[in-house]
Amino acid sequence: MESISAFDMIKVGIGPSSSHTMGPWLAANRFIGLLRDGGNLPRVETLRIHLFGSLAKTGRGHGTDLAVLMGLTGLDFTTVDTSTLMDRFDQQKASDTLLLAGLYPVPFRYSHDLLFHADPPAGGHANTLQFTATTRDGHTISETYYSVGGGFVVTASERNGSPSSRIRTPHPCHTGKELADTCQRLGLRVSDLTIINEQAWRSRSGIDNQARLLWKEMTDCLYRGCHASGLLPGGLNVKRRASEINQRLLEGHPYRNKTEWMERLRDQPRDFATINKWITCFALAVNEENASFGRVVTAPTNGAAGVIPAVLMYAWCFLDGVDQETVIRFILTAGEIGTLFKKNATISAAMGGCQAEIGVSSAMAAAALTDCRGGSADQVIQAAEIAMEHHLGLTCDPIGGLVQIPCIERNTMGAIKAITASTLALESDPSEAKVSLDAVIRSMWETARDMSSRYKETSEGGLAAHVPVSVPEC
Image 1 (cartoon, rainbow, N blue to C red):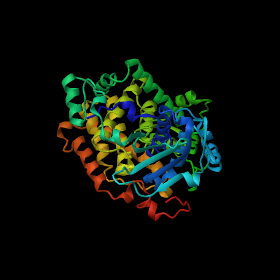
Image 2 (cartoon, rainbow, N blue to C red):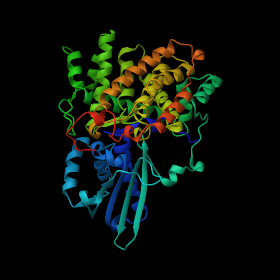
Image 3 (cartoon, one colour):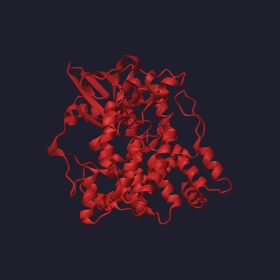
Image 4 (cartoon, rainbow, N blue to C red):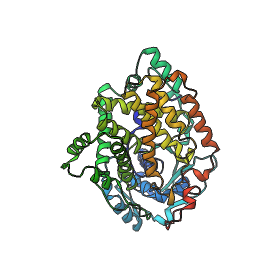
């Protein structure tokens, strides 16, 4: 089984969806690379894009159309000024030309050359997209990509796997039991073992630097989300709430920038009611940014991007002894636990419902918090199990095809469940546990396969079918 880096599970992304926005954007970037590598980029005469399955059913609400067009123009979602995206998109839809890689003009009409197909192709993934280009000398270049969740994108050949190209870590752990047994055998914390294995991809200093970068991106996003007001885009007229909560809680405590804001947060009262309000505020802030095509940290998906930052920020503000080293270990542990779900089940709502997003992120956060609070490897894994167990069967039913209702509030629930799961694990003897993490992951995957497609990010069931909206998405 392929080893996966913790930093593949937690990475810089762009809202509102890792599978419907990030994945298609990366697929478009990859197709540009395919054209360039074949020397065909300057010779493209026509271009057509096909979106299938869930990408078609909720693609407009999730920004899939925006993503593929921005990706084809060569923009990088980790660096682009996100405030300019909607204007760029509107200009592109009104234009009859697409500038491939930002350099080569190709005739392109949005309504004619970007096609939505509700059913996936035979044998395809729920999130399938296809690019087809013809050149002036009559050649056709076509590639099909699958957006498999969390910003991961594969072609048909990659989907089948190639063992010879896989990285093998010093201590491969593909199940919860393997992780626990290895930590016990080596006398290591989960974060210790993850640091050792991560050095198969990058140096120790590289590991620390990447974790610090992710923490900076998280706090930047939290700060923006806690200071932005108004309505979210998309037509549902959902009001941002994080900024008002932040303002009420910090009334009379002035600050001028993010650094001073975080200092004020650490000075806040530590009673349960206040802490609970802040956790709610943190999760809302991130996912309100996500819903606005903002830059977020995908962890492990965008729909669940608020859980891990909310729990980590809770630890930073309200637990004693939390420093930069704690933050690094938190991120690494969370990422390592996420790989177990990626390898043995799914992190895609289009494949498994929201249990695969909020459930997995809550399990990751619970495990990370437990490691940082001194929990043993067995307690870390038990915390992940408890968090996931109480998300089993959670459906994905976004109203209007937008990552807003119920997605934003679900992040607050996932964060609270993660903290509760960590507390339960730390106050328990894991040897007495009746349910293992591996059993929960198997149950989650079985539930995902049994779940009707109506509850897998298609907006055809659940709340999406019973709350009337004027957004003509699905």
